[in-house]
Length: 336
Image (cartoon, rainbow, N blue to C red; front, side, top):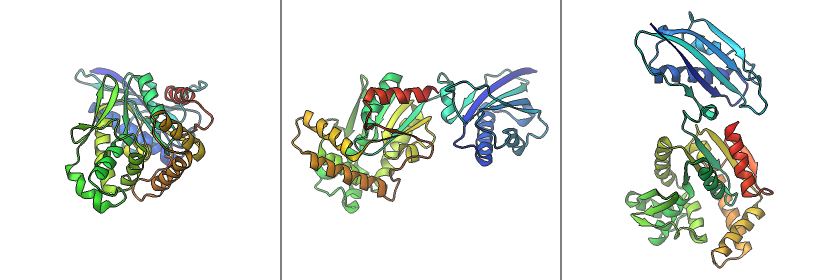
């Protein structure tokens, strides 16, 4: 016989019996499935939980999965200041006839415990002008992972509608264009480039008109479905930072870390106004503020995947913070 021990961990969103058991069952099932282990192979299991989880013993979940004759033990994880909260860890001892390479399994926020093993996905949501794209780009560069600007994809779709003489707010004028629309995201020397129907539009889509059009087409379910499928495919294959308005709630609900950035309307309009002025674009503050308010209304009230903070997302108000402070704060959360 060959004897092994497999480690794994998962986090919970709250200290409740239902959530602890659900997440523990999920972790145990993932370990068994990915390593092709049967209950009969298991010798014993040691569970540990952080001190903020005391609603139920995680071992109850193992019993529910049929592990009724396996010795189980539950302990409290040693507390270390600043360590990962609401975390359940397991060590499973098994015996196998054949030699095998087994995989430790770390899920949800617990992936930060073993970044060498896990793919890291970071979802950054928030209203227009909160600093999502700037923060996401810098964070991705600092972590050495990909950055996916989902907003650019909607901008490309908005551009397609406008160039074809359509109204981005009218689904009847947008839907006929979808079958012939091809939007690609490529990376060249660390820079993201957006292609619309094989034409690069990276710079063309950065105007106030296209910004509004992006928000308008984003309220159309068929448009979001098409682009979300592409976004999820990219996230499945890469460690990345993705920003948008429904990333943590819809596009990547199982992201390693979810952030919701916000700031006052006036502050967000000021930032956008300064950005447009630096690019030499002719606009005024009141117009930009009006557009910010319009986009907020569109994004929060659309029926399909509206802008909202995910229950397990961390809220960061950027009104009185500079970009470096926000990036460092998020990086610190990932390492917790």
